[in-house]
Every structure is written in C-alpha cells, then in structure tokens.
Length: 497
Image (cartoon, rainbow, N blue to C red; front, side):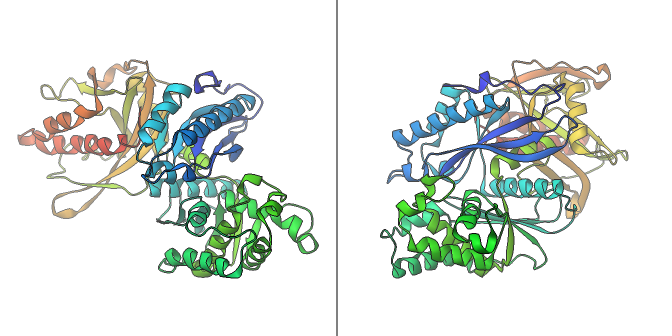
C-alpha cells in the first residue's frame, strides 16, 4: 500500500501542470482534491479521485468507528495516495470532517493513518469545513472570470452535515452548520424499495426542520452547490431529462429540476438508481440527498445554483496556497497598554508568526538578545504597509529559519483591543509550519536571534505564563506575546502529530 512518503513533490521547472492535493475524509466518501497549477502559475481547483467508505455508517452505538470501517478508510487512503502518484501530485496530508470529528475513537483512526500511511490528518471545525467549501467556490468563480466582490453562497451538503457560507471577499463573512446530510437522513428514515409516499413525506419533514430557522442569504448572491450530492444529481439530468436538457453534462440546478429529480428518484428501486451515471455506491442514499437539497431551495430561497465539483480538500489546499486561514473568525485579545514595539511602528500593518513543528511534534520557540532572562516567543516578523500577508510570511520564514518550501498552514488571525476596548489596526497571522528535521537557523544576522529551543505542546502554557508574569514596562509586551501562544494551544488540538 503506498504511503505519503513515496509521493513526489512537484517540479517547479516542469512545463506540465502539477497538482497539490489533500485527502478529504468525509462521512460517505474520501476524495483526493486540491489545486491544478499551470506552468505559468495560474491555479484552479481539482478533484482527482474518490473512494466510498461509508464511515458514517461505520460508527457503532457508542459513536466509535469499527475495525471494518477503519480498514475501509485505510484502504481508500492508500488507493488515493496511489492515484496521486499517477497524477505526479504531492499529497500534503488529510483533513477530517463531521463523521470523523464526532467519533469517540478518532485519535486511534488518526494514529493509524499516520503510522501505516504517513498521513497526517487535520481535524476541521464546522466553520473551517464551511470556509474550505467557500474558498473552493471562490477560486473557481475567479478562474471563470467572476469578479472579486460579488456576494457568493457556498452550500455544502455532505453525508452527515450541511454547511452554508456567505461572503464577498477572500474569506467568508458568515457560516452556519446544521445536522443535515444524505447518510444522516437515511439513518433516520430508511425507506422501502421503492419508497412509498408516506416515507418521502417523512424525509421532507426531517430535512426541513433544521432549515426553517436559518436566515436566507442575500437575494443577489450567486449560489453554488458543493459536494458529491449536487454533482451526482447534476450527472443524472442528461439521462433522465434528455429531451429538455440534451445529452451534455449540466453545471447548474434550478428549483424546478431539483423537484423533478426527487420525483423521478422516488419512483425507482435502489437497483434502478445504480444504473444511473456516477458512483453506484451512492444509490441507496441519493434520494435522501435530493430531498435535503429540495428543502434547502425551499427554505433558503435558492432559485438557481451552480454545481461545483470541488469541495473541502480543494478549499483547504487553496487556504494554504493563498495564506487565508480556514478559521476566519479572529481571536480577540485585550492589551493593558499599546505603547511598545511593534505596535507603535508606523511602517507595518501587522505581523506573521510561525509555529515551527518538528517531526516529533515539539515546537521551536525563539529568543532574541534583548529579551528578559528565560523568555521565549513564537518566531515571526512584520507585514510591511500594504504588503500581502502571505508574501510577508514566506519572506520572514526564510530570513528567520532558513526553511524554504515547508508545508505551512495559516491557522488563525489575532486582533487586538487597547485600553477601553479600542480596536487596533495591527493584527497577527499565525501559521503552523511542518519543519520535520530542519533545525531553524537565521539567514539574516540583523534579526538579533540568540537561540531556538524545542518545546513540547503540553509545555506551552508554562512559556505563556512566563511572558504574562513580566512586570513594569515589559508587561504589555509580555501579554501581547503570550496571546499567540495561548491561541496556538487551541490550534494544535486540530493538528495532531
């Protein structure tokens, strides 16, 4: 079985397109997705392969993933890594969503993915999962000639949950996650084969309940449907309604066609649905997914929506390539004073900090020559006025550590308030950087770096305490520097070794 270590990194000098990918461990299926990168540097989302695992149905009565389901996940991951080799793609790792997030033994699953396949899995919180779908939608929207400020809606209907994000910029403005998915509805309301009208009505009632209280997105927003349910349904249209739509694939679903799809699927047996195009393994749950989508159109006011084949994996890769955190809600920190560097500098918009993680999970903290005794911080550097934060990160990472090309995940943004609650323009962008066996060494001798020390994640609170215990004129600076360590403690809970 292939492991991540055998996947070749992309050749920057190649004249052929390359791929940077992640594996999305979903509730029903696992996908290999990410970005296609052209030789000229242009990028577009891509989904390269899929394997059905039925992880959601592999949870026992205690909420644990059973051994058979774990093995299905391992087998599927190994096959997807093999697919990546075929595409000459680099696999950065994996992301886990609703079903794995809820499993009581998820740490066991993550440990086996790492030990047997070399695959590190980042667990996504609901808002991060939603943001990944939004980033995939926006990247495809921009690649297709769309502008950068139109309001966009990404509605991601998965196996266990549904996420809706709304935004008009590089990151979403709002999101909501509800327990609504094709496999989840199937578990709640299994049907006869074929189903009877009373069973259809029960599915509709269950699907509508979590949607009724949601606020409708702006009427002028462009709606995009993310995930396998929408792409599977769109694939059915040319076969079921060839007279109206012709034989070619469709990339949009309006309200009427969704209703008609539900009506047609409700007449079919599971065997008949398996003969439709797409993955036949979805045949038993696709009717439930279609009804969930029908109710979303009804209660959220969707009239017409574009179908986007890319989802969480592609969005998570775009997050890393663009330096946009999936956790788009800033961490807010109150400072006792603001009259210290770097806050008083007028040539900076903010700073980038990088949590440098070794292969054994420990993190490098940094000390500079003018710091108080036995005080260390997360290393980083400034974002010049008007500079792109991700460009600042790449520059500062190399200058302070000598690292180039390491995997870097933008984790969160920290915003600050001064005395009296006044918000500051200055902000911190925190990254998690996988340094593996590289020992940081500054390239720029003017940085004043005296030492790096490896620290276990469980010891981070002690180092934050030291910063917060500083007195006198150093106290505000200590509180400021401790804030990022406190934020990192929470971030690392979703970045297992």
